[in-house]
Length: 199
Ligand SMILES: Nc1nc2c(ncn2[C@@H]2O[C@H](COP(=O)(O)OP(=O)(O)OP(=O)(O)O)[C@@H](O)[C@H]2O)c(=O)[nH]1
Ligand SMILES: [Zn+2]
Image (tube, rainbow, N blue to C red; front, side, top):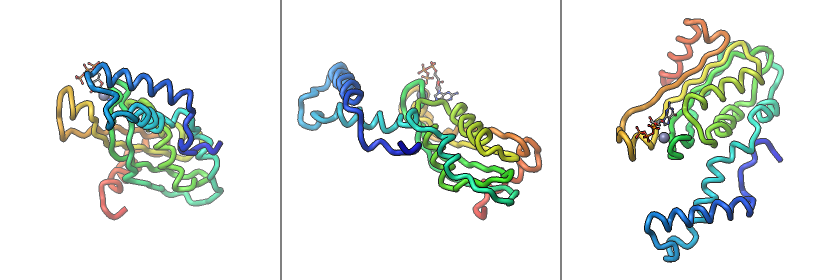
C-alpha cells in the first residue's frame, strides 16, 4: 500500500461497526433515523470519520523517504500556507488553519509535495494542535536530518467557536524549532518570510 493512499475502499467490518454507533447517536438525540434524509447518514458519517482519521494508517516517514534527493542547496526552503483540517481529541470537532514549514537541507532535499502530505498524515488523527506541530517537526527532523527545521501552525478550533466559550475570532498559534532555527536570526528570517506576501 502506498504510504499516502487515500481511503477509497473502506473496510466494511469497521465501517459497519461505526455506522451502527452513529445510528444509535441519531436515535439518542431524538431524531428519526428511518426518515428518508437520514437513511444513509450513519454510513456516510462512518466513512467521513474513517477518512478524517486515515492518518493512523499512513506512514509519514516512508512518505518523506520516498522522495529525498541528494542536492547541495543549503539555504532555507519554506512552504507556507499549507491548509490543514484536523479533529480535536477532546471534542472530536474540527480545528483548521494553516501550517508554515521550513527546513535547511543537509545534503538532501525532499519532494515539495511530501511536506503537505505529511501535514495531512498527522492532521487526520485525533490531535491537539501542540502535538500536531511536534509530530510534523520531529518527522522532518528524524527523516531528512536537515540543518534546521521550523513549523508554525495557526488554527481555529470549532470546539471554541460553535460551543463552549464561543469565541469566533481567536486564532491559536503553535511553533517548534530545531537546529539552526534555534538561533534567533534564522528564526526571525523565517518568521519574516512567512508573514510577507513576497516569499
Ligand atoms: N491545548 C489545547 N487545548 C485544546 C485543543 N483543542 C481543544 N482544546 C481544549 O481542550 C480543553 C478541554 O477542557 P475540558 O474542561 O475538559 O472540556 P470542556 O468542559 O468541554 O471545556 P470548554 O471547551 O471550556 O467548555 C478545552 O479547554 C479546549 O479548548 C488543542 O489543540 N490544544
Ligand atoms: Zn475541542
